[in-house]
Image (cartoon, rainbow, N blue to C red):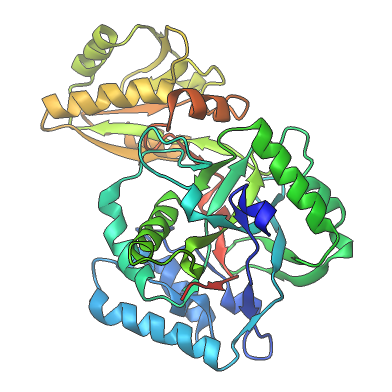
Length: 421
């Protein structure tokens, strides 16, 4: 345990639901920061879970964030956490890790290792050199509500994904090849098109722990940072703030020092980066393109609309309006297309009060929106896995809204938990 701590890793005591009181199918619910404009999804989820203990009773979906009285809702959630612990709905496994396999219809199976991360070795400030680092700028204005929810909570339920750069597939993939030697805890179909989930428990007493420790230390010696946020950056930042407030009272160690997260190998075929495209509204598209050509070192050429797609060239951006399609080719070394474009668009919006922006995941959705008057869509190229960590260590965090991991349905579901109080 002490050796693992030097790599920022702790061994959690994981709680899972007692299957005599509920089912995994009703218990596991997707992270609350998904489907934030889709109340129908959450109404259907409530109907599926109705009458059974469920993680749906242990968090507040963000779609309802502006509609509820937080001073009333948060204590009710905390009370339910206490109830599930007291009445045996939740049962504690021996200290250990959870090896996780997630299958969906959208991508190859994703495998990961559920561990504790040391919040003393995580820093979300700009220019940090910490062992655990964010991959995009943290919007501090989004933290107070999350901190308020976490402060009185008895449980930490992770939906966080964290990357390691394990080219040789020595850690998680090796454990997966040995999965039959570990106890399978769950194997079920997730609700709401979430795919299939399996989990194997690796207790701290298992002989595999020595190898796990050695491989974490070997990756630490080779890579910096060791961990890079993949999903859930603001949740981890809220956990950090909560821990710092406790530590300020003179506490040197505490369950809240640790946050559970699923560690995944960025090189895995189950990790698919999707670019986040951008649409500008309320603009003179010709004037915007003229300004873009003046501000950025680039060339622009018109193309057939049938060629409209996200480019495989990291220096190319496709642009589309109601009347035309274009390819923007950036010039320069060590630049990121999404960053160059976002910086330009931010400046343009400051100078043009009528302009607004939206962020789109699908190419088809973007093309439909770009058919509107005074609108222009930009299709961004994918982020390279090969240069991801190198870019992070040399240039710092990626611009906001640069990439997403998988489809919305592939986001992590709340299932496991641990005590933080």
